[in-house]
Length: 206
Image 1 (cartoon, rainbow, N blue to C red):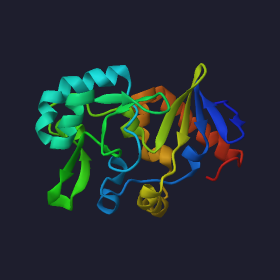
Image 2 (image 1 turned 90 degrees about the vertical axis):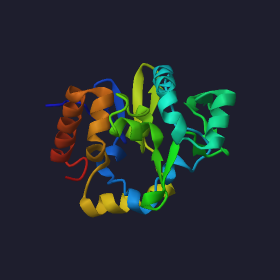
Image 3 (image 1 turned 60 degrees about the vertical axis):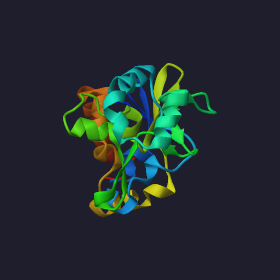
């Protein structure tokens, strides 16, 4: 049983600081409603690590034909990533908003899909996409010696909030797979144990 106390709106799970919104707020992506707007709106690319930049570059020849001419031009000029105004490494973007790796699915209403993930799902690569994309709307940030996780609220995800509420699906359960991918099965089990303990104590809704 986990013994990690709540720190106001935060709690510790292992060496990860988790905002309690991740445990209590409901969320479930509804691509049919939002059409992948999170990939084409905003003012910066998706956070990436140096290792992920290397993985992207390894996939570049395969993904290249799926990219727009504008995206190809951006990558030719500055590479697959850049440092944003907050000093973070992020994927390159087109026109100040669209991720360069967006692929339009015209057969399904013009949805914005990740070209990297499309290759993975077709079995053509062994790597899917940056973990920050898989974890969204959870955002990860370094907090000294710890890792912090917070819920990034964005109006373009209102359909996901609606669907998650209808399904009564908490964000941490919706993102079970990516959280395990990032932090491991044992960590996620500790997170679930922490949730059960907090519910039993009446600290968060059951």
